[in-house]
Image 1 (cartoon, one colour):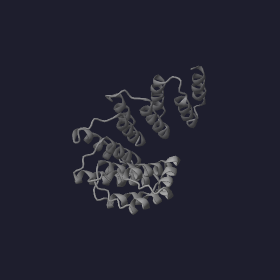
Image 2 (cartoon, rainbow, N blue to C red):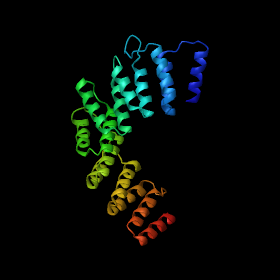
Image 3 (cartoon, rainbow, N blue to C red):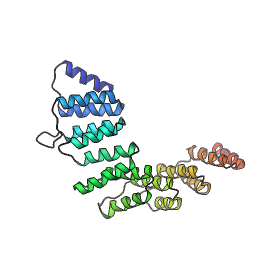
Image 4 (cartoon, rainbow, N blue to C red):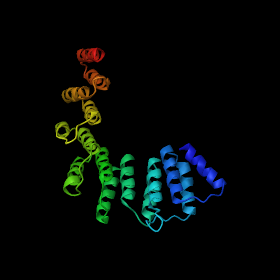
Length: 258
């Protein structure tokens, strides 16, 4: 990313005229570095070159999308939304950048409102949209909204959930203390659940001190990866918080033995 910025400075010194592809890559580098100061300077260059984010004749929309992504990754949510509002044209990626950005920055309600606005605009959501929406519901504690959005993926939008969508739902249900529902969702997944899905539920078990479910989930994690000490450590900490020191010793011995 630093090299990309260096080459852009060289390009300017050599008086080479940058294109929309130049700015797309430049903004991506600023986003990856989460450097707002550099991002703002890059935005100024974009405006100086007169980009208005159209789809034709030259496709500029992705430059606007890169700007939204950059501002969101730098935590400048209002600036990101300002770019979105001022775009002459938008595509699905534009909406996704705002929805996912809101979700990642803790603006769950705003992400859902943007999703509803997207639907009303006639833009069809895709798998990335739904990851952002479910993530927003999880962080905002909107359980019923999350359930509805998850169901609508298949029933309304014809999207088959990916593993990431199931992970988001398990996280949502776990944060809300809906352990049985989360466990049932994992065990009925059409995809083989991985350690990330189960680990999400185990973290919720620790937060709620649900030792019974925690033991069950830890066993599932150890079946997937017997060499991973993480489930042992988390389970041991759960026992320690409850003052069950014999169980702490037992789990630690098991960890050493395995």
